[in-house]
Image (cartoon, rainbow, N blue to C red):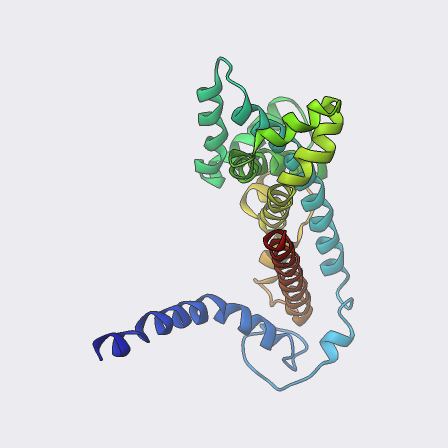
Amino acid sequence: MRRSRSGWVLPAYMWLVLIYLFLPVFVVIAFSFNDINRGFNVVWQGFTIRHWLDPFRVPDIVESLGTSLVIAFLSAAVATVLGTLIALALVRYRFRGRSTTNVFLFLPMATPEVVLGSSLLALFITLRVATGFWTIVIAHILFNISYAVVTVRARITGFDRHLEEAAMDLYSDEWNTFRRVTLPMILPGVLAAFMLGFALSFDDFIITNFNSGTVQTWPMYVWGASRRGIPPQVNVWATAIFILTTVAMFVNLRIQGRRAARSADV
């Protein structure tokens, strides 16, 4: 009886934590349907779908959103490629300075964003580089590489090297072995690193604010609009991004589940 009574405690605690985490998201979704034209979108005025029918009403929102998407894609792609190569080198090779390299890779993750952003700004000013789009990309690549290395290295650590040796025994060269054996095996980790880098870059504000110049990203627009009232279209686009991310996550889980089932059958 004691077990049956205490069996609901952990599930109830779990659901309370999930509600606490997702309550702000649900508020954002709900206020995308708020019947308001201007001012602060914090008081419910009534239900409407006209903001969803005209999400491009505020041009600055679309422009800043497109800028953030491009920056996030470029920085995540470059950081994933570099991070994958670094992870392969750290896991498979022993070289002088390997431990030091591990320490330096964790520094961008441990350094406060204010310090990192101001340091990058000082570097760009010293080199006389005008801040703008490409300085944001460079800054985002810098802190994304560390997350990419950690994510891909976790996948490579459990990789069976005998598969590569078997491919080499069948007269496959290094490039074909990597392309046909190694990369498909570590691809889930590579994709996870890319998605993590994309999310971190898209969401970054502090480092971007130091190195953006006149370029305005999505977080910077939302921060500036919060002083005079965030348009409901911001909630619309935020809800659309949340829905797309959730759908992509469930599709990925479904694909991974099918692959696991096929592997179990084999």
